[in-house]
Length: 178
Image 1 (cartoon, helix red, strand yellow):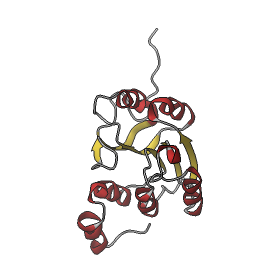
Image 2 (image 1 turned 180 degrees about the horizontal axis):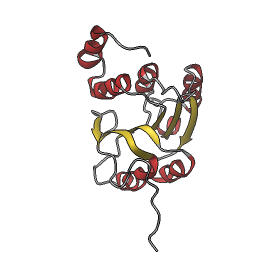
Image 3 (image 1 turned 60 degrees about the vertical axis):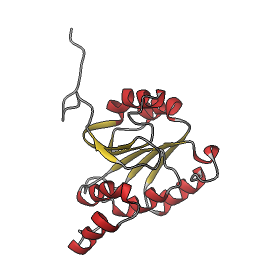
């Protein structure tokens, strides 16, 4: 997306709906995003709004999008797996969609998907559940030192930016001490 005007910025800051995602949308406008990992897509409206706002860095030819979600197995109000693939293909993003619950799928995502520039955790965050513990454990593998992580405690709740896990430094490869 080209630079936004001050009027467009006012819209995204104060008028965009739903208000719970405004910080996420402003981040996508202000920062280049080459890869997105989303844990919990929901009905797909956030994805439909977010994709046009993301501008990959010059060295990234195609936006990479990965998601972990139960899709249609969680109910009729969820985005279907086929619908998510179609939406991402239409928007020119490279899709890597993994159906399943966070407890069983986050390890698979950590081993198959590279660390992402933008991580969105819809629900399952910091609420003392087993899913929150599993996500927190694998978050260092899912993100890098320049990642932005937005999370909500309940599905569809207000997304707030959370700190990147400690121990992630730019250009530092962690090795075992002898």
